[in-house]
Amino acid sequence: MDPTTIEWDERYKEGGEALPWDTGTPAPELTAYFSRVKEVPKRVLELGCGTGTNAIWMVQQGSHVVATDISPTAIEWAINKAKSAGVNVEFKVSDICNENPVEPKSVDFIFDRGVFHVMAKDKREQFVQAVHDSLSDGGMWLCLAGSADQKRENEDHGPPQLTATELISSVEKLFEVHKLAKTSFLTPDGHNYVAWKAIFKKR
Ligand SMILES: C[S@@+](CC[C@H](N)C(=O)[O-])C[C@H]1O[C@@H](n2cnc3c(N)ncnc32)[C@H](O)[C@@H]1O
Image (cartoon, rainbow, N blue to C red; front, side, top):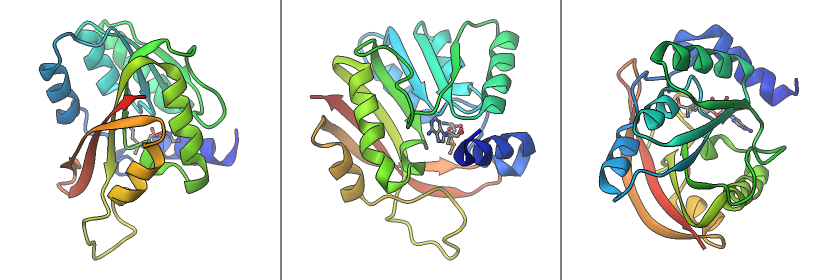
């Protein structure tokens, strides 16, 4: 395993407080998106799905979901959760920086909660290109990312923080910006981190 994979996998092996993003409930921004669209997206890719809560929820809404993560432990956990829930998710261990996890133009909707924001600056272009390649024409990407608009006493605590300019300038060449709004990452230990809720449409 390469160092990035090991780092993420170690966190999933540790579990508990090492996974402050793992709320165990579907993201409210995702459920709101599904409740607003005329038709539930048929073919979905979730990047960095962690322990699979959102992927499982989307299948329960009627989507076919491919869900990937760099961490084999997270995917093992997600497979077991899906089995217990009795739903069929196509889980894959995959590093978005090394390979496109699905065939070009094979999905209509991509969901990423806290994954684009963990990419090193020199990987962002590759990430956005992979999202673009995977989406069908006019496909949508719902991206949730930490916001730099929150001043923190301890900058080491909480999700990575992107400015609106960093987020938009990374995607604008390949995506129309449909929505950029503030939201929150509420963690199981009671923290409330300001985040971006961005909806992008493939150009
Ligand atoms: C902050 S966590 C969010 C997990 C999940 N989306 C959630 O909300 O529970 C970031 C996730 O991205 C995954 N990840 C990090 N780098 C990745 C990469 N290059 N390719 C795929 N997944 C990656 C990590 O293993 C981790 O599960």
